[in-house]
Image 1 (cartoon, rainbow, N blue to C red):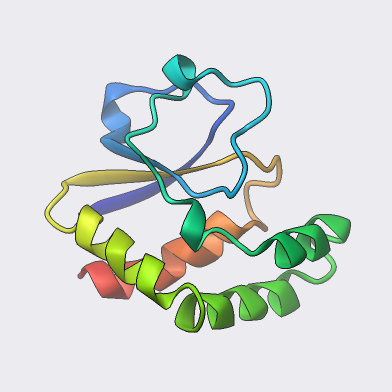
Image 2: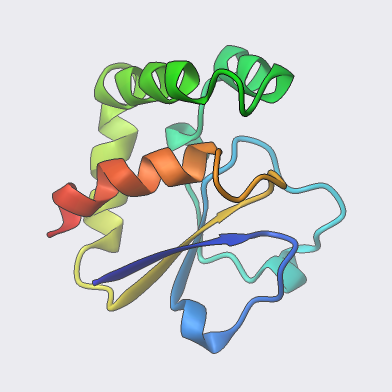
Length: 120
């Protein structure tokens, strides 16, 4: 399986395969048609409190917030994560779609790292 990441504000393409929105909130200003989302996995997105902390200082506290998010995925969000793994198994290409502007320090990067070993 090929696992990718892409911003919700970038154009969807056929090469994206199965598109999964991994944000708790729908991306502002993006229509459902333009987003071309196959699955909205909001229950695996960071909690509201963690999302607020992450946006307050996205680069400075990346590792701290990433570790908190991994703990959330292993704890309260574990059932949602396992359900997502079940949905993604067997799909040749999956693109994790997110809204945040920072493409290197965001929760989709962390989620991708968590998903990779679970999907192989």
